[in-house]
Image (cartoon, rainbow over all chains, first blue to last red; front, side, top):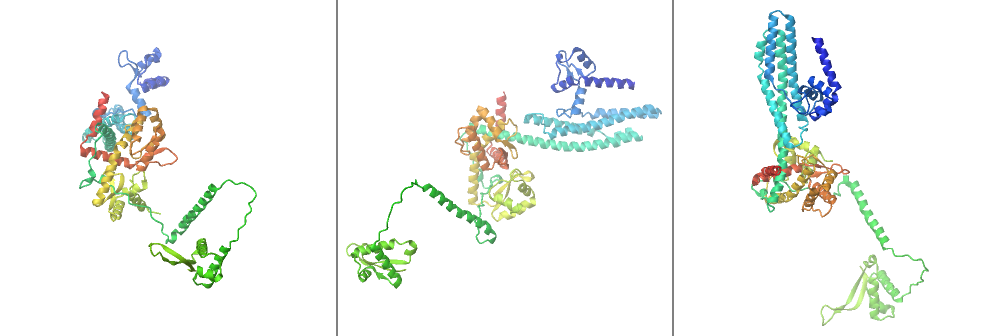
Length: 406
Length: 213
């Protein structure tokens, strides 16, 4: 019997391997067109229960078990099937436990062993299914339902996942360990299997499920927030389209201002340099260096800009004419410096018997004083001596000037 | 060099918004209630305190607010509120444009990345988006006078960076990140929606269903 099964199983798996490509095509696209396969192959696959035809004239589809096998093996996100049927599993446990107890009672140990192995298989499978369901839920949470495009679809997927979690939790609640303990009686193996083992896996799963539920709620909240924001934006634009002259009321002017609008004005201005801080000296010096170099550069560029056309030619001869009047003025200045006392210009003219007319001489002196460079000029003071005009006020008639050292 | 506390105070007093994207260290510092208390103590001498967008433990954006509101402060706040309201429509239009060009469900929020080049090529290829961008960029908030998409989009991004809604982490790349100020903007719209009873969400919902029918 088991040899037969073994052979049949191998044949089935080989069948799958040999037709892996059409099977994967069917898995990915959902169905397989009639023409895609040779009639003989198609018939064999249908007979072996790999493909089936849901209704007359429809395309070939993969059998649910094959699809589930692939989904599980490939950890496919699209797999959202969750088996929450705890009730039937519990009834199976009880039935098998009954068989086992009866066989032991009748001392049919071979049959009892077979029943126990069967029961073990079922209990382990139950735990496996639970943890698989949770894994599927986690994978959906972790990629945030990335297999559906729109936000609304994500929200629906989230709601589906939540209902599945509640179903799973409700199923776990149905497990009554007291009843299972009664069923197990005082048989050690049964107790170990039905009470200890099951309890361990169920408590781990229910703990994890509550975390999953929390995460799902959190995600749903986020999705709703995102959707709400999108709607707010669109709604605002719509509103402004409909009422272009809409003005928001001055909500910041109320007595109790919302924290949201309590926005302080920026109050930090850049600090000023402190020249008395010795620590800053190097930086300040560097800054000063930059300052100095700037005008020098400007000067250079300005000179370059002002350069005119340069023509090479014979140098024009010129001669500085000797001017006796200017020499006399210099002598007058020298006399003031030497004596250190104020001397009137007309007195000096008379003293030196200078040939120029009095008025000319005065103009020469004033011109000589004004012609001095600034740094020499500030050592002299030129006083005007004269009187106001008798008739026209504001006019001052200069009769003489006096030069003295400042 | 300034300590973390000093840096955070400086940012706050400059009127910056502190979120995870703009200043992660400062944000972590502010997330700690003990640190916030210290800052509040310090700022209270300047009649300031740390304010948050949203409330409670999930508040992720911090800024500087007044403790006591006198006549002067009220004036400042009112002016700021008016400024925000005036800028609301162009900003919202821009956010919707970004969302539509990316064909995304989620609008731009804190931390989401935006590639200028991608956005530009999509806008350039679609006349409707070009028109929208033109309208948006000519609002006074953005103040673009350019006639081509390139100039308009660059001006809009430049202004958004100046206003603190976007940052550009790497100056060599045209990749921008949304900041916490965007979250602030959403909160402002939500508040206006609620207090003025505009029912914006319902309206958008009805409009989108109408377009489906």
